[in-house]
Image 1 (tube, rainbow, N blue to C red):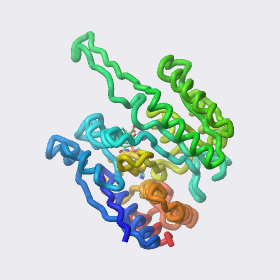
Image 2 (cartoon, helix red, strand yellow; image 1 turned 180 degrees about the vertical axis):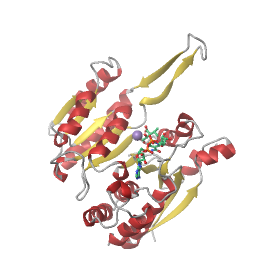
Image 3 (cartoon, rainbow, N blue to C red; image 1 turned 60 degrees about the horizontal axis):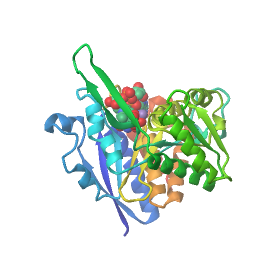
Image 4 (spheres, rainbow, N blue to C red; image 1 turned 90 degrees about the vertical axis):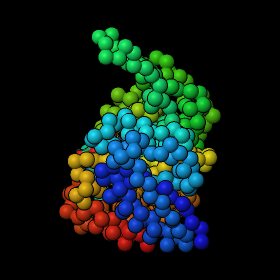
Length: 352
Ligand code: NAD
Ligand code: IPM
Ligand code: MN
């Protein structure tokens, strides 16, 4: 039987709790599809850091490179500085495996509750493609004259032709395939090098896709339109930091962080891709059975798409919509009283 080898990194806080539910659903989908998943669990996390001084072993990347995909919960917990934990694990994996496409659907599912008034599922249906390998997250910079009155910090954004072009092209290929418009979100008025460059490359690539309608917004106006008129967005392509912020906003308008999924893709398949909810470790609710597992489950559905089983990915998404519409087994963030694992069980039951 075809078996996919998955590296599971629960990470911190609610990370392991929500992944356990995603795994129930993956196993159900695999049984339907006549294949199997084999999971290898890694304890890499802030707790691991406090014990060993590292977020993952020195050969962690090499170890992960042997897997077909990575399923990750969340990273970051009080007690370890966030920049240490994130650069030691999550961001290191995204960079080392050149997962330059971060695919984050912003879609109001049937039965999900938006805080915007009078919106229907068809009004919020976008796919945000966040550049995921460079930009503001290049990790380049300096901290000069540290701890003196002259100290200063430089954080260098890195926008390469290759880096911008490939992610923008990915967006256009998707727009062409799905007959959708492609919107670039940038900030060339103020960021007079990086974002002027981004805009130039967007226009160059757009010229190769005359069949794909395009739009461009400055990120400040785009944030406003996400709330006032989300209908105008279909495929959205943007830089690393803007994509980070806009997808939390996107989560907020489409049912909350408990529902927002993401895939970190290395489209060429040279390295494993990684599937993880958009949300963090939620220390405020960790360990209490309160976490909403639907974001992690939706990310699992993206994994099924990635492995070439879109019909199974859709079954999982349909099951999520059914559980939301039934509204009998929901976690507190969705207005219910069910536990994380009761919600996971119900979704797994509905995948058929
Ligand atoms: P967060 O996403 O963890 O939480 C924000 C708020 O949303 C909290 O009130 C939390 O309870 C709620 N929430 C998040 N996910 C939820 C879920 N599945 N169900 C119900 N409620 C949910 O963001 P934060 O508090 O800013 O960050 C906490 C830690 O997580 C920090 O260390 C941060 O760096 C890290 N973080 C990691 C990732 C990641 O691993 N991808 C993403 C974001 C934040
Ligand atoms: C996300 C997170 C990460 C990011 C953090 C934890 C570094 O917020 O995946 O959205 O900014 O990419
Ligand atoms: Mn984020």
